[in-house]
Each structure stands twice: as structure tokens, then as C-alpha cells.
Amino acid sequence: MEPYQVITIVVAAFGVLIAGGGLAVSIISLRRSSANEAQSRRLQEKQEELAELQLKLHRDEVEKIEQSSTSSASNRRADVRVSLEGSAKRARFVIRNWGYAAAKDINFDVTPVEGRSSPLVNGDADVKLPIPRLAPGGDCSLIAALSFDTGVAFDVSWTWTEEDGSQRQQSSRVSL
Image (cartoon, rainbow, N blue to C red):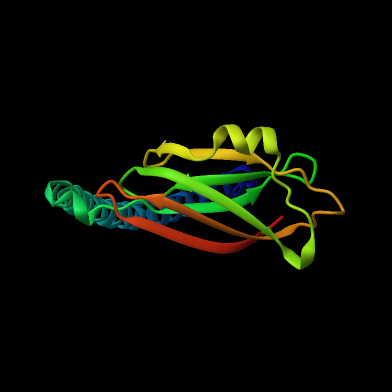
């Protein structure tokens, strides 16, 4: 055999080996892509199930809300809460109605802790209190002038009238 024939056979053998390697890589890629496709299909099915469950949950919540809104007004109540928010220089007492009914005639009182002075600003509190009506989700803020004389913790109490005319009272300790 001539040397060029040997070289041709060796090059052809390498070509066959490279083509075989390419075929093996193609087969492996095909299997992986089909496995990924199957996994993707399962994931899509699970996402569709989850979407159906979320839709069902949302429908149930809407149905509950509709049932509660058709129930008597005496079951719906105001939920008035007070917090002290902001920084020491811009502190405010925030009165919020978290309930499902409006609150009327809201009064607010601060009892300073340990004999300190009240942080309520007279010109602000006198004008805003009592709050005539606070709708569900509504809020009203009162300036809190904090200083060394007032401290940063206060016992607060507030009263309001429900839509059905009943009186409610709450108290809490708030601090900055």
C-alpha cells in the first residue's frame, strides 16, 4: 500500500469517528430535549391546576364577600386603631378604620407615661377632634410634638360610635 492510501484510510477513519461522535451527541441531545419537553409539559399541567385552584379560591372569596354584604348591617363593624408613626421630628398619631363599617364621633385621648406632658398640639387636636365620620379604610392624623418632656411612649384611648349607635372604646400603649 502506498503512503497516500494509508493517510487516506486514517483520515477516513477519523472522519467516521468524528461522525460517530456527532451522532452520539445528537442522540444524547435528542433524549435530553425530549426529557425536558416532558418535564415542561408536566410543569405546564401543574401550573394549569394551580391557576384553576386560584380561580376557585377567588370565586369562593367573592362569594363570601357577597354573602357578608347581604347579611345584616349589625354584623359589620368598625375597627378603629391608633398608631404613632413618623420620625421624632415629624411624629403623628394616625387613627385608622380597618373595619367594614364607618365609625362616627371618634374621640382620642393621650395619657402621658410617668407624669410627662402630652404631645398633642392643641391647635391641631382641637380642630380635628371629635372626628365626625371615618369611612372603612380611612385615616386621620394628629400632630405629635415629641420632646424630652413628652417622652416617646404614651397610653392612648379612643372611643367611637358604630353605625347602629352602639359605643365602643379601645386603649393601647403606643411608642415611636
